[in-house]
Image (cartoon, rainbow, N blue to C red; front, side):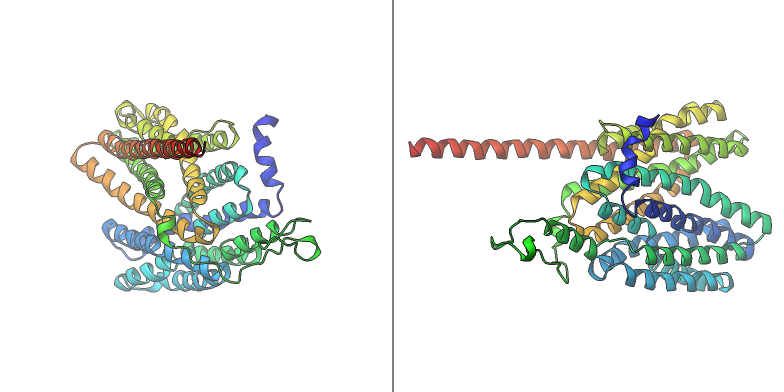
Length: 443
């Protein structure tokens, strides 16, 4: 047992790491309850239809998807605190006023204040993890973060539903979400993890403090340092230097993963409703999430982790047969969800790790924002897609459809990686051949 936890101990022993992961849990709680609180507010407090509630939730999702890369770019250029101040004031205003707004005004306010200018907790935490943890330990760090996300999603929505249904109103819960959001902003402000500009500057500062190292001009810096200077502003890095086909496929894989997860969530409810066993949905989802936690723990502790496209392939392939087996009873559904559940956290963790590794620190905020947008898009597509397939056919085929999309994206990424590897090998052969010819000519 001690060996299983050994890979995580160096991370938790790093200065500030434990505080960061505690904040990662607490700050995400209100975020996971936002959509549920908004949906029940429209239905219970405003007497609206579920279609109207779904539209409000979709508007918030679109706003978050649009705002995520914009706020990420602002973090890259201006630092974390200005973004926290802007989004904290925005969300506080939204949650205080939302319970009293008529539906049309609520939609506009939800898009702007609740979505576009919502606190980018997920991307900020991922940036902080990437900046604080050395490259060699990022897999374990992102695996730990993915397990925290699983715990948050097991707790946050359930608490919101329990509070709202017990009080028959979402007003108090929305106010609490606002308070918790402000609290998370204040906590992140105090913690002030180095990301964006500061992360790159501090890395440069550490690189230039070794005794006896030489500066860029070949001379030793003062007091034996290498003369490294902290840039006041990061160099502008063109998008074309890091938004390459491989990076786009990473984003597409993250989108596919969230599409599969959102589609599975809807399909579980639809299948159990068909069996008159909706009350067992909590058991099935708990088993699904529990295996995701175990999978995340394995991914961070194993010495031979699987690559991102392989994980995505297994997640999609494991989802395809769920409905066909689960139609025989809820206990079969809970069991057949386990293999796909095991792949959830490792896939999401590996996606974040791939994004962090693909870009320089000064562009990481925008890259993580794009990842957040891609995953938001996947969730926004997955749920209605699964619902459409359920209405047109059956829950079994909704599992199969979303799983097949995941398999297709994973296959595309595997194909591209193979193509890129072959092209690199040919380039090496050409360079090597040129060197041999030059040596022969010299003789």
